Image (cartoon, rainbow, N blue to C red; front, side):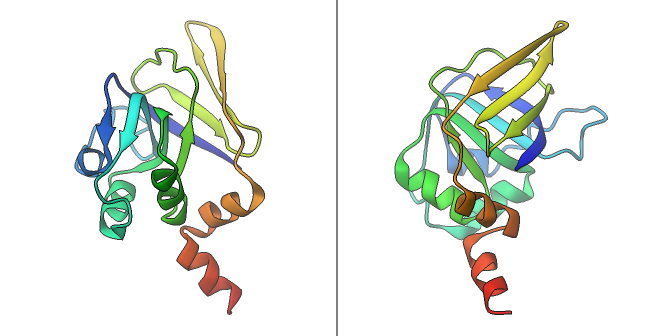
Length: 147
C-alpha cells in the first residue's frame, strides 16, 4: 500500500490529543493531500482507545504518523482506527510540505530534497494491517466481511 502524503515535522514529543487539534496544513497546492506527522520523539496519549480522538486526527488530515518511539497500544489503536502508525529508528530533517511517498508494505518513506532522493526504512506493516487501513478502520473491515 502506497500513499502520497505531505510532511509536517515536530521536533519534540507530541500526544494524540494535541495532534487531534493541530491543523498544520501547508498552504500549497497539496492542501488536499493527506498529511504525515513526523515526530522526532515519542508519540503517546492518555487515552488511545477514544475513537473520537482518532476521528479528529483523521478529520484534520493526518493519515500517517511516524515517530521515533511509539508505545504498542498507540500503534494498535491507530491502525484499528484507520491511521497508519510507524516507528522509525532515525528521523532525518524533512522540509515542511515535502511530498512523501509512504510504502507501508515495503517499509519505506521516500522523498526528494535539494535534487537528491531520500529514503528512510521501517518495519513493513503486514497484509492484514494494510487491509484494515484500506477499509478505513477495523470496524469497517469487519462490517465488510459480513456483507
